[in-house]
Structure formats: structure tokens, C-alpha cells
Image 1: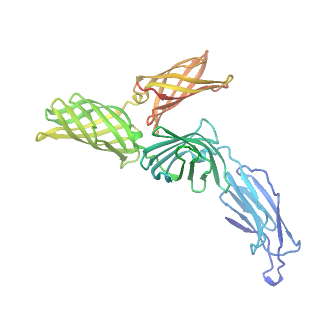
Image 2: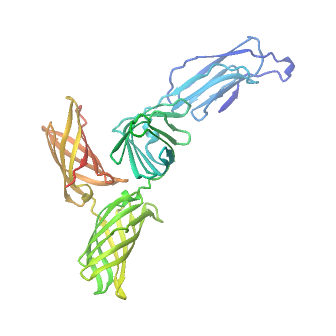
Image 3: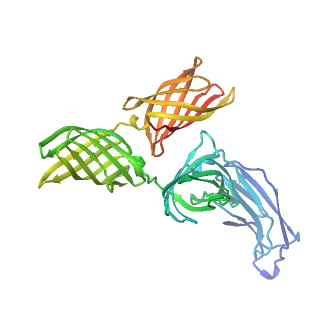
Length: 465
């Protein structure tokens, strides 16, 4: 809160004539743009009062005050909404609040990113909360929200809100989040209302109220408080298929250039399953075995540490696994050690690179809509992604409009994989963009022509073979 004294007064308090009422004009100013200035005038009663007048803004980060006398000039510094009023020195007489709104054409830009939180519900405390806010298309006021959290007695759960609408909040510098989210636990569907959720632009904090109190089976309200943070879903970041070679020693002698195919599958945000296929025998995580994933020492890396089993022609041998993944370059280094029968069975170092296209290939069933020159829903659209090489997949989908057949380049995109390519429909060129979520095997696609009001949007889930 900032104050500015705007009229001089006699230093002799006995000669001051007190103010009994204050009004400010304009009382309902139009919204400002960033950088705009506006002059406000304070009128007071009695007209011959000499008491000092003070101007106050609720948030001096949103606007500044300059000037003297009974006039103040405010300047819009950033977008948001705050209030300003005039008062006398004793703060006994206060003018009505003047609401000042500074327009923004991009509320979503404030909020996109990752958040870490803590929460509670009727089921008990909620921990390890990771929240991701993403844009919905090119919208300036709409987000997609994904909440991954550990829920007491139910393990890790995912709550998704496909469309979260942003509006100005009731307090200065805040924004309301409204929409619906869904949680599926053991076949029970919880449809949450997000009304009451708030984003605070001052400290970038997020308060989520997930209200499913109308659920007839189990009324459930979840409250989450979150702050900005790095994504900690290392399980999703590490997941993928890798191709590499091992060097070291084994019971059969030196190992050099031994080819290995490595598959890492996400179990949770901090655990993965491991399968390695090699001529010396398969390496698997059996019951009660798993690989922990955590942050690495260097930036953009994660560590692997756990137990597995070497399944070979000579028997099964317990194996320790340690390693590191460079999440930007998608390169893997593993140390594999197994011993038994009084000797070292295997002691090798594996270096590998991710075959990222293997993550997204598969058959998907999608739904969506056609918009633009014509409008129609698209349901049960089969989508096939086939591996071309380490960085390319072929997309084939038959929609109501046309068949889409093109190659897409696959690139890492945080915990997701971005898809990009081009195709031709009815002799016209279209761009194809998409995203694949490896943690739940879902796919989104957008096929559009920038010169035409015509777009196909599809969302699909991988179909089990």
C-alpha cells in the first residue's frame, strides 16, 4: 500500500480546519493500458478545510501516484486491478474506493509453468503435489491443469482440468480460476468444481479449491496451496526406450561393445521399472525390486538407483543398478553389477541414447472436432503412429473430412514429446502439431491452415494391443 500527501497545511495544528467529507473524480474511470496516465481530483467538505489530504493505493506495484495539491496523477505499471482512495490525515474520513483496472491481453502468460504444493482432504493429507499449468491453444485466458499427488490410502493420483478459465479476482493482483476437473479412483469418478481457486500475481502462489461435495458416493473437497517450482516427475522424464552398448567384465571374460536395448517405464514420479535385453541375458525388476529416480547433481539430470535381476542361461543373479540420465540430451549411463557363486557375474558400464519415437508409436482412439468453414464433432477416430527412425514417426488418421498421412518429427518437450509436421488435405497445405504424454499415454493433435478458418483438433488415448 502506498500513500502520497497532496496538499500543504499549516504547521500549527490549532489553525487547521478539519475535513468532514471527501469525493474523488472520476469515480468510475475506464480501464487503462500499461503506461497510461490518469488525473484524479479530490473534492472535500467544507470547501475551506485546510487539513492534509492523503492518497492511498492498495498496490503500488500495479500503479504509481505523482502530483501535489488536491490532484493526483496515477500511472499504470502492470496489468491487474487495484483500488485507490483519498483520506484525511487522521484517516477518519475516507473517500469511496476508485477501482482501477489495467488491461492485459494475456492472463495465461502469468500462470503457465510448474508448481509444488501441499494439501488436505477428507481422505487425509495430500503430499508430493506437482501441478502443471499449460496454455489451451493460443488462448490468453484459458489453461489446462494437471495435478499429480500422493493421496492417503490411494497412492499417486492424477487430477486433470482440460479447460480452466481465468478472470480478475476479488482482491487486487489476484485472478480467479474457474472450471471443472476430474479424478478417477478405483473406478469412482469425481467431478470437481474449481470455483474459489485463486492465483496471486504478487508472489505467484496458487490456491486450488477442488469441490466435489455433490458426489453421491463420497463427497470430497480438496484444498491445495502451491508455489512455483520445478517439475519433479522424474519418472516421466526418464521413461523411454534407449539403445546402447556395455563395456566391462563378466564371468565369461571381458565385455566390449555388448549391444543392449533398454526400456524404462514410469511407475510413479520417483520410481521406474527397468528392462534390459542383451545377448548375455535379460535384466529385469522382479517383485519387490524397483529403481528410484531422483534429481541429479548437475542441472537437468536425474539419478537411477535400485535393484534388478540378471536372468541368464546360468541362472538368476541379483544385480545393483546405478546411473544417470541427461534429460536434455536424453543420454543414459548405467553401472550394472551382479555377483554369485563366489565370483563377479557382470560388472559393466552402459552408455545409451533414447530412441524417442518408440515412446509415441502405437494405436490411439481419438475424439475431437472440426471447426471453421464447417462444424462437426469427430468421434472414434483411429490414429496410428508408426516408427520411421529415431526421430520420426508416421501419422495415419482417417477423419470425416479426409485421410491424414504424414511424417512427424518427435522432440522432447519437458515431461512430454512434441510432434510436428505437414500434410495436404483437398490440395491445401496444413501444419500438424501435437503432444504426447508418456505418463498416461495420451495424444493431442491440431491440424490447421493459417490462411483458412479450418482446423481439426483431436485428443486420443493409446489402445492396448
